[in-house]
Length: 80
Image (tube, rainbow, N blue to C red; front, side):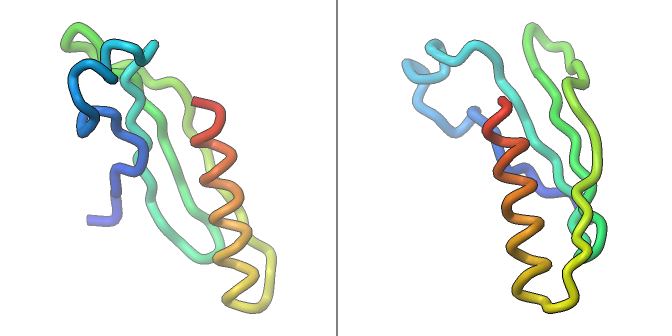
């Protein structure tokens, strides 16, 4: 399965989760040229889509591709 949970606050201690405004889960469909992602909010037993999109890498060298993908995923995480 290509989907990986990246940002999930469920692993935090209960007292820290109470301080979170939402429980956001980031799913990533990895790829070196196009990486898909989706962010959902889970609260009161309901799942709501917050954001979905793609991160594109146009770099030729593998190290540069990975860096562009890293930067893109980090930007998504910082939004939530």
